Image (tube, rainbow, N blue to C red; front, side, top):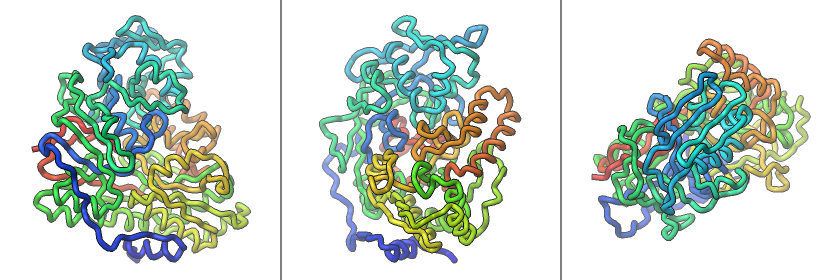
Length: 537
């Protein structure tokens, strides 16, 4: 049976969730502006954390891409290219890398970017990023040689080092001022001063309403043309404003009226309206697609028990979720591999749990075997991201059908970003499940994807733990051929679906919507938004 979004909302109401649906929707009036030099955008979610090392949430990563720069960047084919680096070399024993910064790099406060800033930034990022953690484990020294040159010396060779430095999986290696980067990775940097192509306009910041980015007139882009995250970051507009319009129909009305220029995540049921408007265009910027998943809290009942987590594998009917999140089949597909659908490591190891329609009776049995005793399962529901919100409603409904005590905890995405860091029980503001996504391109590399880490307290939110799996993941960097990594991927996936590090809900290709007057948007190999290169006619 095909489920509509309206039916899902009805199910959520039956589950006791109150939804406020405005009877009249109208676009907000845009302030007067220089239309040709200012771009107004509505992004997916809200910016509540400004430090792109502290969190992996997309709005914060977009913010980082605007105001900071990176040492290396991935081009459209996923190949690392120098960005802030002019020259680099590797010693004969393959243990010492020497990097030289290019000319013209300055922070927004006017001070030059130095090797010391790079060293401090690598060390801070290395506390939290999976590839950075591996680098820090193998490094004997990361130090400045002179103001423009720094070295990384390793105990043993690390072949994919430049790929790790060029990561497009949050948190990216953004170069901060040494004074900011010397803070622990758990302590937020709030200065918003980088060396990137945009400057954050503090005076015009309106939390909950809008954030403004101005062109950095002093930025010196590379000479190469823009290519993915790499190449010249040429800014062709004077200002970009992120308008916070939580209601998606209101955002579409604003796009049609020309009050905004770009709408990152139009809801699937409104795509035909956009296609029929001669002034609007749909464009897929993230070619790899987004894998949607449900992350469970390994630290608290009931999901501290592996059988309860395995129950969720059998409960989920991906096709039902995709009908809700992306009803047009050209933009949706099921996914069963830890390594996504489009990567060379995608495989079918240990995927016998996947079944059309799911298996609710098997899920109910596994909850009983886990000793489930009526504990409350709290599902975080992002009310301002439709796909996350609808998926949370459907998860709640399916759990209630098999007798699980469920409570939805609605808030905007910013509230969820804060709450999901709580490791305590639900009675103390903790949680049981949250819904999110990761781009297919990044999920396929366990060196750069926080999603694929299972080292307990040090892992990404949900804190999965499997020492056996982590021992295998640690050998990934030393695999010398594609064939070796593919064999390793099968072993890792087999373990992952035994301890259930997450449950996949399906994969979507999500087109953005923009006015046809906005051109030359950057297409990237992963799900992050770049604001350079675009032009407004």
